[in-house]
Length: 165
Length: 246
Image: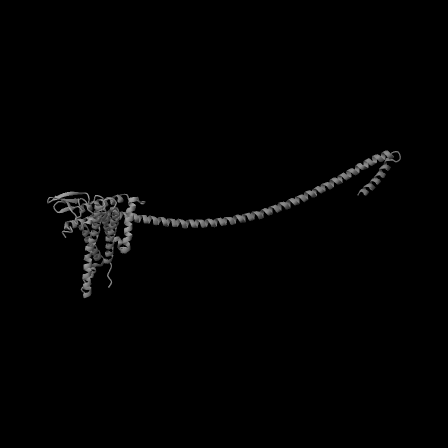
């Protein structure tokens, strides 16, 4: 024992040294570091959980967005369809109305032309009679009396008008 | 000047009349101061996002924990401080012997007209007092853990009179248990001391470059011996706290 250098006092001192170290490290190193590690682990876990949650939420939102978009598209399509149909209806109505009006206008125009034509005819007749009377009067003033003249001209004119018709 | 090799630690001075301060004791105190201040520094600024020092200690503390967990399972939390302290204390005492100046800086003492060189520092574990103290504490701790886990039935492992075979097995168990003290202390002391001697000899013959690979080797040995000490203790603890099944 002497040769190996073992001394009871030294032995005891070193044992005490170890126990001191045990106490000090336990207080200063293991506890705080374990606590820090535990806290970090918890934090990371929380973070991961949160990420998972957010991911799920995002998926939900994305799905909903898709659904809404589809719905909106459908609605838009139906609105367009409706618009097309009602537009066609209106167009048809307008066309029908316009064609009716056009017919009416044409009809009216025809009627007006007819009336004018008749007026013109009577007017012309009158003028022709006057001219004929005038001509006949000048030519026949010496031969026939004015009443005879008128009678003959009327007869002739009637024949002419009859021929014209 | 020849090679200075001494199996035992030399006394440098004396505190009071009862405590001779050897060079290994002085070095042990230095190691304690270093370890304590490191722990203080780490503790003073523990933050969520760790710096370099905190990271190193976190890796060490957590790595040791998972390592011991592989042996002890759920009992790790209870035994961890003891095991980790063994590891940190021993590894630093092993490595401090590799620092330049340890074993070479010293005093000269004249005894009986002869000049004797006494190094000021000596690796703590290169002194049998240290390793034996650690071995004794570990032994006591293991027995204590066994008794507190299993009660008095733990002692049945050693003293069993129910059957002559068990009685002799118990004696064998007791001897093997006690021999752990010797194997613990001499394994650690032998490895570290041999390493120091090797380095001293190499450095004496080829002072330049040649000791470098051996320094690396001794770094490794220092780590391995600390690991072995702590791991063996973990294994013995797990054996002592498990109910024996016959």
